[in-house]
Length: 104
Image (cartoon, rainbow, N blue to C red; front, side, top):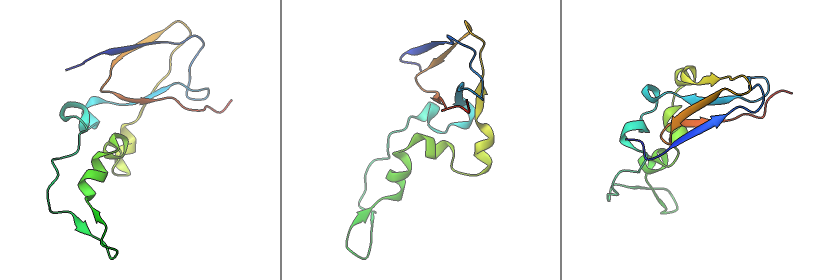
């Protein structure tokens, strides 16, 4: 359930060439409905040769973008959302989104 929304308004034309928003749709984001919190800690952490404990599951959960883009094929789910000046987007806090530097 959404806790808040973002309403983004393009002040100028926003295209992939000059930096529009990109998103990972809900269906392609494993953390969208479940959340991105790490699993409960257990004593099953592995130790490396220096005795440092690590938990690969916890590291995987620490970065929602890495979870959503875990395979080469998953990059096909990224969607550019170009907008003309004055158009807008409304999305929830759960949608993974980012802008780009652009080419211009």
